[in-house]
Length: 115
Length: 110
Image 1 (cartoon, one colour):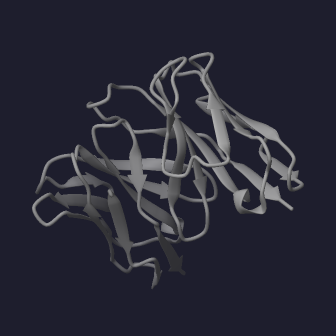
Image 2 (spheres, rainbow over the protein chains, first blue to last red; image 1 turned 45 degrees about the vertical axis):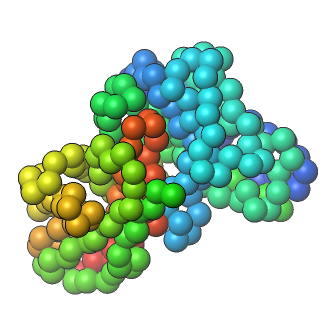
């Protein structure tokens, strides 16, 4: 099992460009999450999904869109990148229900720089 | 608004020291509190705590939750340089989400 994988690992964008980050998991997990991590701020939830075809907003959703067309994939899109979106992005997934919490498994991260 | 606060934000110790990391929370609908260790890349799971007063232990690491006073501590005894990392705590409610604290950066010097 590969676990949770993310592509790309690094990316440099210019302001206004768009891109999509791909997260894939092979553990048949229902729940998937996108976080960003900035120095001194821990992990902040951008969007998440509780199952195929569903998405919901997290703490910092502005400027991002997501899609979960297949259970194993969760895409994070930036339509018009801004320097404030320079960050490290982590994807995570977990099994279990809404009230039976299990640990999240994290991908290796994508380092994005917006110039 | 749900909030998780960790202290200290950074800590420098020498090998062999014992450290205590703190995590306090103000949240609604508490379900569990989780601790993660983050080295170069992705966070890795350490503990999940759901009940007060029951210590979870793994080698030199241990953690306990106090649901009355709304905090958790993570203890590391006989620290080693390999313990250098960011330690994250996170709260889980009944929405399927995790709310993370800012993290504590621990540096263990030889």
